[in-house]
Length: 180
Image 1 (cartoon, rainbow, N blue to C red):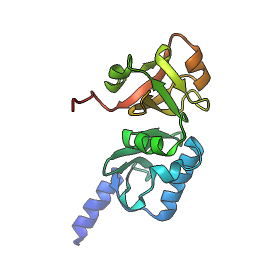
Image 2: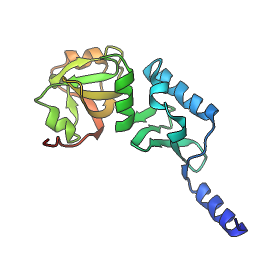
Image 3: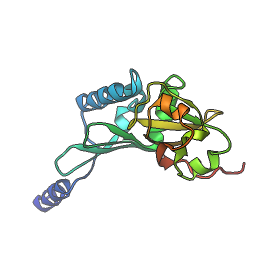
Image 4: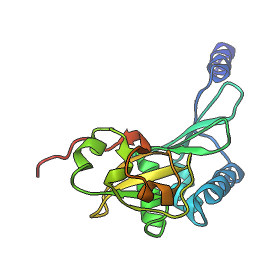
């Protein structure tokens, strides 16, 4: 490589962007954060294939978004917690015991949630007892399929108790159902 291309790459790195090189220690650290936030086993579920993980970094080098080929797993917030992407939600759904970190809705609100609308308490049939306001949660249909991911606005028991108000601020949704 020429000296000019090294300078260009360094300049691109200074502006932030994608970096696919990471060590096993870094993946272990990311797994530890997931285990702390979502419970034991979440880190292995989210980052099961370290070779396929792509990390986008801020200009300071801090991980910002973590992707795999299927999509965004998580974004890394400045508070040190993850915000889920749909692919991260799918992986957690497979790994966590039901109803952990799940808010379950029925047929009445499914099309709205699929379109990215927020979830309201009166439509929730099940909510994980461990959910605290501000936690990242999975919004799933009663039949078990993932509809969206978002931030809980209430704790799990309150979501079930309240008759009005927003339960989950939806961040990413799967989109409209397709006819088979």
